[in-house]
Image 1 (cartoon, rainbow, N blue to C red):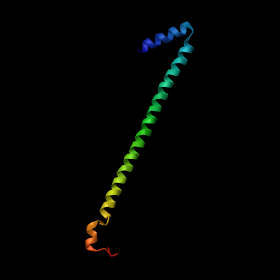
Image 2: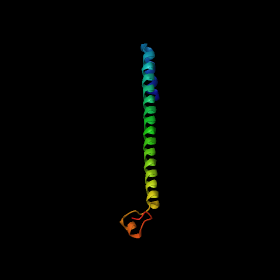
Image 3: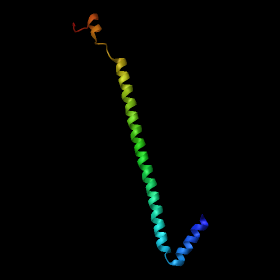
Image 4: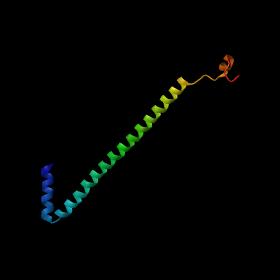
Length: 87
């Protein structure tokens, strides 16, 4: 593969278009690198967003469970026992 690329560069140099070939190659490489960096950045942002949503959901469920454990029973049975306010 390296030999093939070297032959192409030699042909480009012989034809006098080596500068154009190198510029075109540079544009392709930079576009590829930029695309990869952008995809990684978007993926990290999305993963962080989903993790924070999951974390909020877990905290909400834990808070609800804690409230249920600490809640006072104010249903119809509580009136039969007699509450301090006379109900």
